[in-house]
Length: 206
Image (tube, rainbow, N blue to C red; front, side, top):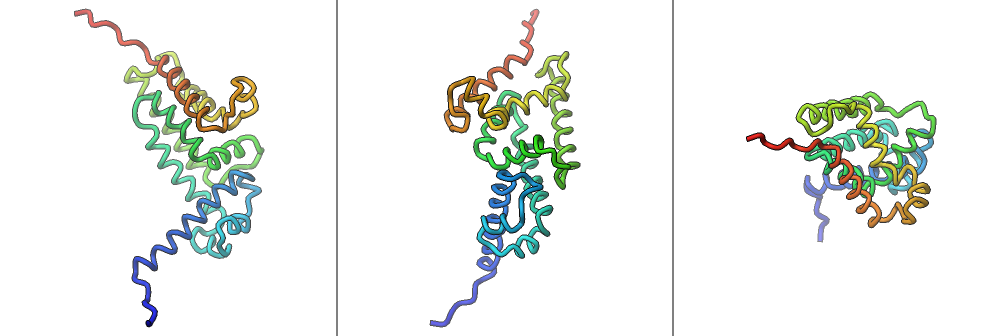
């Protein structure tokens, strides 16, 4: 039988799968080596594609990082909705589901690299989270005597602690900080701690 030419949907599907494989490989490569040490050839090998495709789809390593950073900020914005305790719980659980990306954030902070291609975007996102905490404070969800910027730093550090300090976490708890069970328990305990920050509602004088 004669071969059927692929229809437009089929022709579109292959590039989408290829892009997805490249992005997944990039997260793994960045997480394992940090942005500066990661190589396009290593990403291509992980994805099983010709490295020229990375330039074609993303414009190279920098474009790959920017694409991933945009996705992270979109997901982070969605996680930041709801009660503060649930927001913190969600970020802890996200480190379990996206360990390579979370590991890249640790690399970026401890490696001494000059920075990543999207520092301005990351800074803008985090500043927006400070503003969001300030709005929660004005709504009575955060105590008045806490500085929103410092509070955000504490919460980010606490949410990422099992990944950034796995040996300390293991020595303190006697558990494997990389396990799903530990992550679930830690997320629950941190959420309970954050709940204690919320000022009690005064009784109705009526």
